[in-house]
Length: 304
Image 1 (cartoon, rainbow, N blue to C red):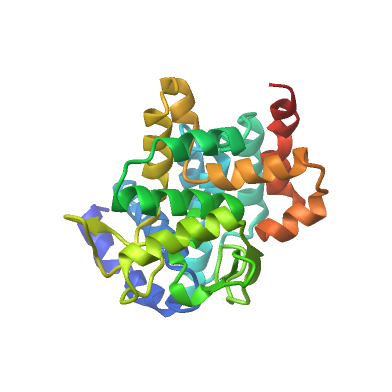
Image 2 (tube, helix red, strand yellow; image 1 turned 45 degrees about the horizontal axis):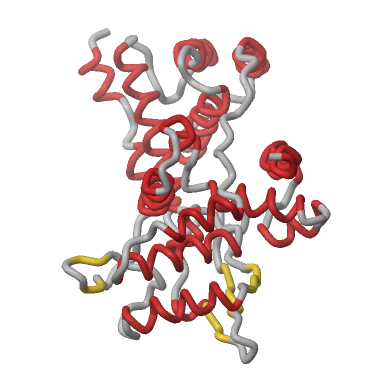
């Protein structure tokens, strides 16, 4: 059957996915759209119905995705197919044992370790702070680096902070509430505190930026603050550009990511003698699994 004939029979899954708005994080919904779109395109190219999909179709799709893709990506696309069938109120084929076995084969065939961002530990932080430019961008960059490190934030958490989330305390430090995160979809929030140095950096930035912008960090255009939030890509660019300005080698620069502040702060806390339970509370981790990967290189940092 030709793809355009199949396309006429594909349910309007995009409309159904709008029901997820408000119930899931925007990034999660974006991933669902992308992964289901890839699945539908693959089905049309291979002359099979995407909805309802047969067990054989899902197995073939997963096998086709495996080369060049991490097992976690394949698993995410399987979950997206599952969500699409549920939203369309169709029989869900994804729990069939044959699909489970297919995924297990894919997972066992790829004996690769998850890629881990290089930790932006205290020595790197100090070097990155030292190379920030003068003027408004330097004020913002220093505040972002210090706050991201001391609060152990994810990129999305850092750019989502608003002025209402901050409280300057009498002792010169900051009390910050991180209201919503990947591990806290219902926005119960977690409380964190900063050093006096970080509080001063944030105050210096706010004094220049002014009180009229809701988001703590905002773009700067022609030396003026723009009244909107930053994207998560800005955090990654800040870390990479700081590493480059600090004179690091290309391979080392590549190893840093927007997640590096969170990784490095966790490693520093472990090296300072804090136990994993305390580090989990500080960073908002719910399980030890991910944190355990972050801490693998912490012992090495003690000896270098």
